[in-house]
Picture 1 (cartoon, one colour):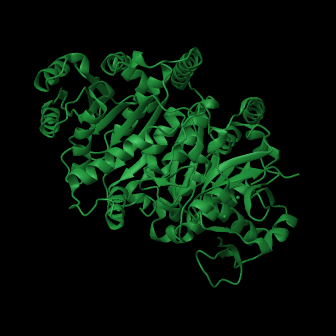
Picture 2 (cartoon, helix red, strand yellow):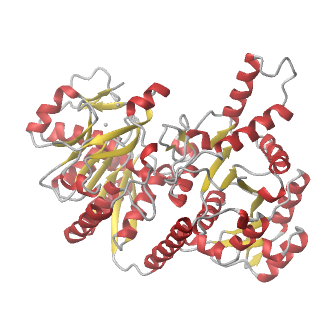
Picture 3 (cartoon, rainbow, N blue to C red):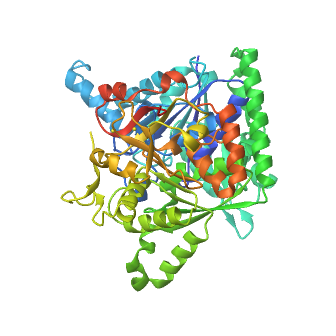
Length: 587
């Protein structure tokens, strides 16, 4: 029987439920258990694909093309699993399913209601998805972490809270545990417990009793024993059921913080995890994971040398818009034994107009770009800021500064080349000007081969695979002209029709990817293109070292069976967002 751990939140949203849920799953994996995760988002949207980055942060893309909440990225990175769109439940998905059943007559003429029909649909969904294999074992998970988004007491989350109340009886007491995350404000040095008392009281009134209360402190001061005792007394739990999660130097320390407070021992007893048979191989894999994670956090504390990257983007006012990009840079910096210094640059501030409208921002932006060891231009949509991005790309190309362009950044690198190397002054993207006479980037219905630096970063593989989210491509009619002028497209899709990876051979590191490799990074297995950027920005010797390591040890983060080719994906859901493509090396 699958064990379920629900993670809910109270007082305020955005206090770290996702990191706590992921950290709990990671700790369970260190014991040899197989763990999966589900995120519940109570909003009416079917998925996150149509949301503005400034509204909800990054849209995270999964293997099956699912466009989901960024917390699923946390699960994949921490748990080293491969999830699907069904691992993200939204109110929109549940209501759509219930209404479709009603239209088909599945409810046999009954009045369709929130209880029991919607709540039963939620439970059925969780139970079905919790059984799906998500790792290289190909076996059913032992534990499913379910994060309930939003805040307990919200109107929109009420059906899901009620579904969880019912679910605890459906699966049995020994198979269901609840972790409630609450804010403990620190006011002038005094830790206040009243918000936690109130939210736990509300939770109990809804029929759910927390097994663990994770007290989130937005300061670097740990939870005091007196505060812990008070929460224990007024929230009707034992002291060992109250854990503190204060701000630490890095989120990668959170699993160890929870482990030091006995959370795993408690869950082993509460859920009778000893009843699950764990093979010696899985136990050894768990021990290895714990050792490597501890080494990662220790190494992070000893970093002395900095590497500075300028991230030139469109949504820098909401840094969660680039969550996976930042994580990819962090993971790569860990591998290279460097402390990452990230400079956020709004691309619009680099454009000539900004010199007149806001000269201070203009000079600050350019100061950040010219002083960086490497430049990154991530994904995006629309014309705003595109000229500033191309100016940054031109600087990186001409000054031999390591550069990585992702999706939109890849496309703009080609446009910049067309303008400044090929002399095509009117070169632009059809996304910006559909009637342009020099369309360098055109609308498509699709992605990559590799050799040189990029292929080495992927361990010399003859075939590489990454996730996609784009609707435009390099104009096929201009490929020969670009190639003859020195721009090398070392990656193409399976049919050799669409350009997917570019490199400049006479440059320390100038790489562009149509794909989004940031969605496949792992703390212990960084995304190869980002690793190349950080290594090159740290110096040629570091790059050479990492290329040698990658050639010997790189393994894709996904099980072979989960790397779906483009034709298979399109037969299931014919839309360009979230494509996956297998990439082959150029002969």
